[in-house]
Length: 301
Image (tube, rainbow, N blue to C red; front, side):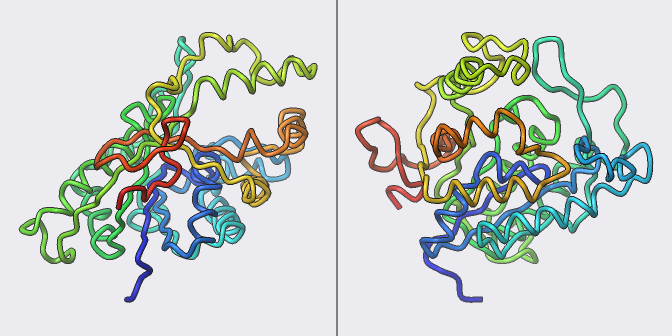
């Protein structure tokens, strides 16, 4: 298979995570002719359902949300032009682990999790599945979550662990030769939520008169996210913000885009959704802009 010179791989836990965290980044690189691969680790079977007529799909009823979210993901990828999107081991191979909210406002492992969930997956087994994809696609850049999964969700944490292990194993020539020729990923990024940008968003929502969105959040003490000094890169692509919003609409069971927060974000222009931040976890930092950040995840390669 002949692939473009630039190749980037995103690893996410559930359908919709990719759109929220990396939507404009994915769209930008597709538009620039890079090969964009998305690997999703679960079908999101335990997600909340925001569409009343589809509530019967819930895990505690028909337990049919996973296949539905597979179709939502496919529709979202059409908006970005991403044609290479896969589920780790195939759709449904690893089940969504669910979560609960901790007292400090972060997510954590639910009191009960099924044995077939991603949280309980054998790390080597899961990593080997990703190694095969890495060696096939040979990405220079891999993007996933930080060690906390962004906000603590166990599937995000597990995706971080699996990706970190797989990147290391993929580069070892003697490891599982049956999975393809060894490949060294040049740069690994962790998606990051900018605390300052989140704080600005919360304040703007409240100034607009919306008291329910982010209720109970203190913009000066957000329980997760990255301070500006920890950020290494930002992808700002306002020309792809509309595609990101359209992809969010495709994830209809998970994201409500007709509420005051989304109306406000549209009124603010593209600044809310058009900038996505990253921390460099492995590899050499490339040239930076006046803001001290890389503006291309392939910078320096």
